[in-house]
Length: 76
Image (cartoon, rainbow, N blue to C red; front, side, top):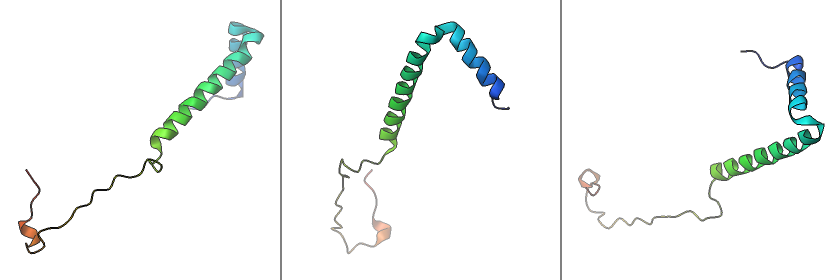
């Protein structure tokens, strides 16, 4: 699958100009840019590690150190 060339981009711009007019086109571009920026921000927030939230630690104490490891089992 080949990408869109220069002639394809020019054709898309001309069609958008005919459909929306020269006055409405900058508004649509700004709205699209804002939407894309908010989407990226939301995606980055979901992907980032929760550094500020404080990792929850579970302190596991080994009370029965005399038992061999083979006898230890998880609760059922």
